[in-house]
Image (tube, rainbow, N blue to C red):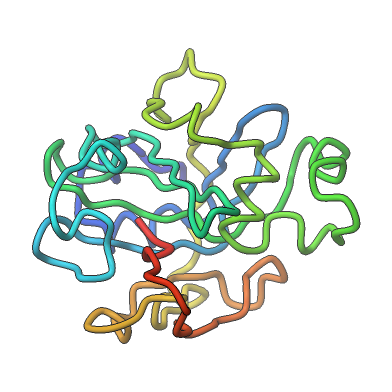
Length: 207
């Protein structure tokens, strides 16, 4: 049964994250089936979130209405994509961590030269590159039927196939929060990697 994405994204990020598994993310000629996501709460709730300390020019889209795309640049190398959830101003979001390319595979291969089909969108930076998402797409309404960057409903994943664990790359107080969700056994799910200490101050690689 297809999901009502507007209703899903109006709710809490954990429920939204699990419901987004099996949905489709389409942009720039490529469509993915989402197989891995992470949930992030809002201001003062989640130390692992970009929204934890409040709204800035950089993270303003994560405070947008449910369905707003938040794209950020991390470690000077990669873009990552999230969708805002809960009411505007809260700052909750779901990070798109992994997907299976179901349409536009030749385009995806050109963008990810040398990657196997399994690895085309296996991880948040690869996913964004596969869809050719940059900061230019930040703030797009993913639920707008006229948008070229869309989030589309898919079939529900059976609860027994949805696994959870700590979020990838989150350090400090929020490190153990089990808000990473993935489809059990799907080859496009990325391997878990704990946070590593960097030689310079690092931003969290999450929403």
